[in-house]
Length: 564
Image 1 (cartoon, rainbow, N blue to C red):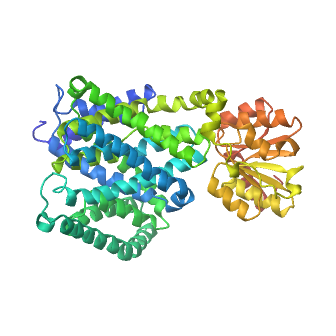
Image 2 (cartoon, helix red, strand yellow):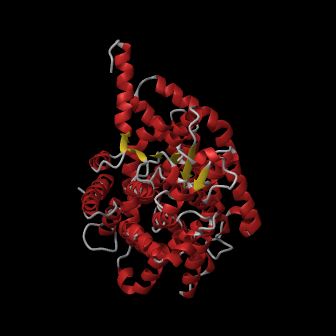
Image 3 (cartoon, rainbow, N blue to C red):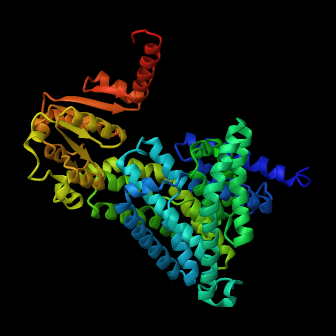
């Protein structure tokens, strides 16, 4: 039976085993992605037992790549990137350079070609979008300053990898791989031809796509059919990717990426992301399973030192480089450690690069296995890496000299200017966080004539606030030095408006130590955290969902003439 229906057999085996091992991985506090990769390894040709149809798995994986890259383009927020561009752009670029150099140098010592070493180094330099976002979400850090920097950093990494995917095929011959048809072996002609094709595709997408697809989505949405809307989104992703490959010689991945970016221009982009998510998740699982099928477990036994070197570059070399770069830009130690932990793994782009490297004759098969081994191990231990952030931060700060060197206390943005108006320094409100909620609170305080000082981790935001004449200091308010610079001793109230409640207790403890009579107000989106804070009677707590429900209830009751 299995021979007559290979597609169904492959789907049933891959999804069934992925479900079981994904569940086991989650129960063991590991990312489900580890289970999917192991499922692929178990049904791959390198392990005994069931062997799934590799050709069908590969085609299903191509669809998975399209939908994965479509999702990346759909979620690519240039606004998020621009908000942290001063650190994300140079930081990610330098970190990719450091990690690629390390990977290339190590591979060169193994006797690999320049092309293979370079692809290998690039594959080790880029983190997994799926793993990073889920790790930050699990810790409630996605909307924090550290989370925004990590996401902006990841966006830059993704963009660099998109460029790498475009440039690798025309450069393959020059790097020692398969000869390309473009340019008849002439490097510059090959690169020029590729850039022209890609430019033509991008121009078509920007000129036609940005006008056609948002209108198409609008027309489909007007029908009220959820099925048609989902079909439209998925059909656009797959069709554009296929058309790009057929007409412009662009990879499926790049075509789908730009399809997502164009779709984002529509007012229905959030709905498009939501409606296509189940299908994207299902095919993403198939992609990871198919990648796992390429993994040869023998590499762990036959080349243990190479595996250790790969994991070391990913979890130590890349992380140290990222942390050092964040600190060099004078961001707090907590931000540096969080960003470095977020990047201490590899994933989707690494697999795609590895597969393209092998198909172009650049990367040896053992290189692909080493990349997969590095991904499996780094993803598996990423929760442990995150768990070391707090203890490591405490250890560094307990060594005052080391902390002083790493945190750069001479930062001019970490203290209020001498010219700060005296009214800001007595009876003021210390406002921690100036995001969407903090900004509204600040506006209300300003309109009421109440002085306030902002404590914010985003240095670029602090610079903009100071340019507007608003008193602001840069740093993590859980550090006593930051609250001291905000003159907490003479403040009347501490308002914590940041969604990152990780350090709230430390902020309140420090504030009350320096100013026992200060009133504290805290925002949280976590019910357990809210109950704990209220039970300890340390602050007036506002729970996001509860306040929203109260506001809506007041409006509804008011319409019926009922007092809330």
